[in-house]
Image (cartoon, rainbow, N blue to C red):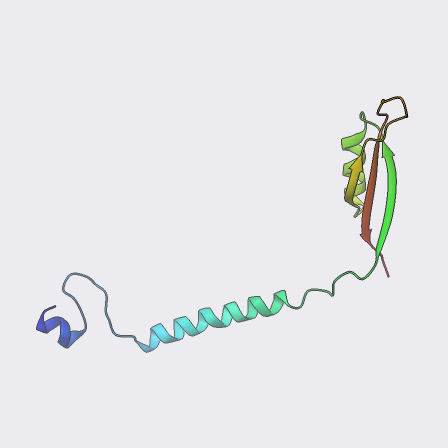
Length: 104
């Protein structure tokens, strides 16, 4: 590093300064303030759900996707799905369990 670089804090041709200006500090402070606000808003989310409403439905193969979409729009979330057998090894429909938060 040259004597000029040591005196001015600049390396010739680099365009970068090793000195920190007041503007740099204010920019960093602004960024940190924005991050603090964003993190604070995340903590303002509503409290976790304390109770759930459950629903069990039997849904056929032919209407499965349509029925799932309807229930999803109503706020139901699928918890489990299985295809029970009729005793002779034949599966008939999907038995699906849904849940959603209770509405107080």
